[in-house]
Length: 226
Picture 1 (cartoon, helix red, strand yellow):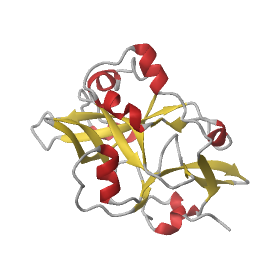
Picture 2 (tube, rainbow, N blue to C red):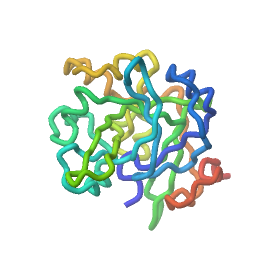
Picture 3 (tube, rainbow, N blue to C red):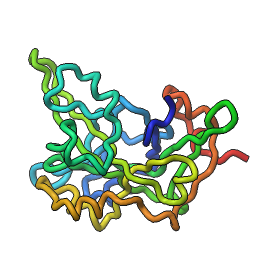
Picture 4 (cartoon, rainbow, N blue to C red):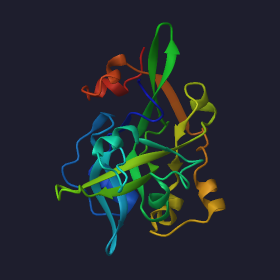
């Protein structure tokens, strides 16, 4: 199924912009990404010894208790309303919250027999952060450990509601420090943070169906259709 909730996104800004937004050293090896898909490596900002780090993890959270890492393929999103009680996420939402950098995300709208992809972003093109959770998984046979993440979703704002019944949680920079603290948030505050982002600064437009293929990651993915 295309676009289960938040199933694709973009990150095309420079290393300098990312360093400034997340208050971390400029990451190396940054290339523009126009069609980031589940199971691929994504950047996350998270608490680390002595401050914050921006590092790559697998998109699709593998719970620490999982026997098989393929369970992560179904854990690309976590519903904000149940994140504190679901076994796969309840430990991470207390102690392992992260920020997932992006500058746009895709949703699909029914169009005739198929679905038409749309890109949603801030009208000024600025980078932002999804609310994320991360987890470390260690195989029982002593194999290679895997760090992975999920994007928290919520009810849509008016702009996204025309396309889908969910949207990723976008956190304002003023909430970054609070979200990254490795300690539980009070339930009322968690609910406040996991609300839909207001739509007045955002835009949405139809884009090429090339974005349907996770193998395609060219700039054409993010160009408005004429």
